[in-house]
Length: 170
Image 1 (cartoon, helix red, strand yellow):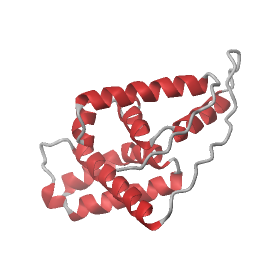
Image 2 (spheres, one colour; image 1 turned 30 degrees about the vertical axis):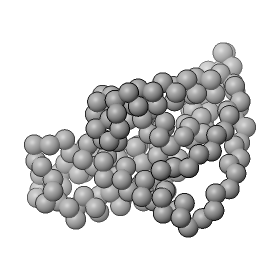
Image 3 (tube, helix red, strand yellow; image 1 turned 90 degrees about the vertical axis):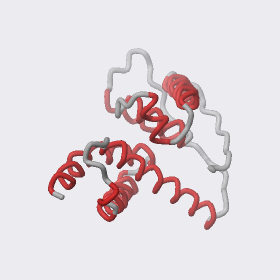
Image 4 (spheres, one colour; image 1 turned 180 degrees about the vertical axis):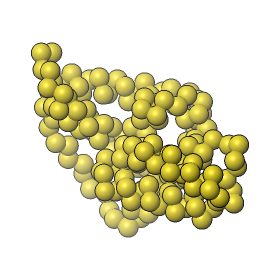
């Protein structure tokens, strides 16, 4: 039990980063981490000591996030998405704070499934196969989503206007 608790505590920074990237909101991200840790603790008996604790926790978090989206869709009608205009970063702009703000805005504009793959590969440094296993999708889908996410991020960070396509989350 002590080993389990220690492993949970070690993963909290990774969980917080992943949750914030999914929700695009620090408070909602922290709530998601709390829900994930609560569910993991209540299902401690399912944890395998020799398994990948981070992957297990990320799977729990992903499932909670998807379930929350589905629940919200059932409760509220869909409304058009209005994107805020984000400032472009010029070649000579060395202001790190502005760059980070623009990066966060661009990340928030990505579709959730694209943002999720981008964060898992780019930030959490998971392999494509680990991401495919975690999200229960084919390896090719991981690669496709990652390519699209990177392309859109590159375009948006270079000042192109984002195109919004709304589609139902399933």
